[in-house]
Length: 209
Image (tube, rainbow, N blue to C red):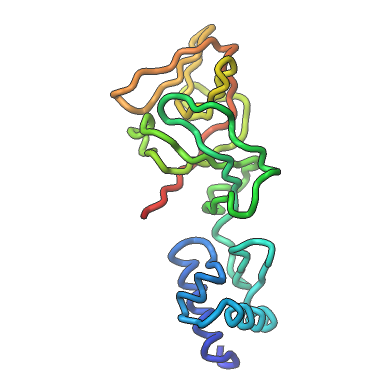
């Protein structure tokens, strides 16, 4: 740190503090405002200096592509494919991950994603899962899979109506019960042949305003 200019020391401390508080790196604009710097070009100049000093790694292709050297990444990026209903089913299953831009991702705890693949995220619409502490506006993280155990929380695709919904899955012989976690709402019953499992919920992200 002693060989760095005061502004570079301040920026490095800001990045470390930001990552400790948020769990993901800041954008260039975050650094500009957080360190009261006149322009993003000044931030960029000093980030390049910190990179040359071996203190940072940086990917310019993503908005939060800053990594502190020697610090284990705490988060991983997951594609945000769209919305899912926690209430009445929503039409149309979410987007293909290949079509997404950098802004269509969320950051999640890397430990939660450990030993898991094919993860994706959906933003919840409605309050049918509120008793499971999932409310309108939350983001659920799902493991993509086409089967589920009884009682698991899943994204279910209703084939005949082309709608998707977030519910607990119960196989009941020739039919499926999609059970909300809200005592004010009743279950959805469907022919088992009409239900496709699209993923199992493994985590929830809440955005506090």
